[in-house]
Amino acid sequence: MIKAIITDCMGVVVSSPKQKMLMELSVQYDKDLEDLNVVWKKLMEEVYKNPNMTEEELFEQFIMNANLQGMSPNELRKMMDLFMVANKEMLQWLKEKKKNYVLFMASNNWKERAEYLRKKYSLDSLFEDYFWGFTSGVTKSSQEYFDILKESLAKKGIHPEDAVMIDNKKEYLERAKKAGFQTILFETVAKLEQDFQKITGV
Image (cartoon, rainbow, N blue to C red):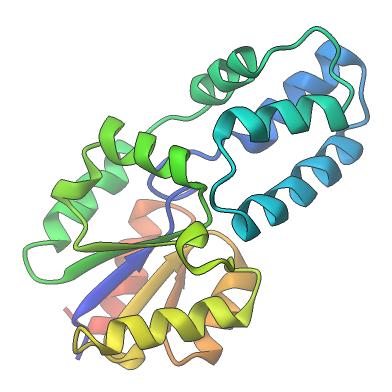
């Protein structure tokens, strides 16, 4: 019987600003989009290994490595915030599900961004707990993340087969499934509800 829902943040609850931000930077600074993606990905790997890295340091490092001359960390932060919008339909869906299920969030966000999201979108009113990449030192790109998640939920009396994980990335869901979780690929809230009903029978 399903007891818990575990949802991703970026791309599900909140729109992911990364690609739009990198596309904008690619145009503004005449940079190859794929090169910017590579720089960003490498930095993300670093930030999860070093949870003490501040957002300011992260942005400074990205600007330097991507050679975005003249840009400041604050400008980059504003651009990221601009492209990050709450999925109000998804937030409402979660509010409804909270009446019958325990809600958790599983996300690769770094510490300061996680705190920003919790405050801006009042996430604490929805979620019982969070599983951030920076707290475990690994991300959803690693099977270890899901093993840690499974152990953490077991302490709360929730087994993988009793939980549905929602994400917009197939590769993450494949790892979640391997760890024993039920999974739903997020596309739209309407499709999510259909898939959820198939799993729960409700």
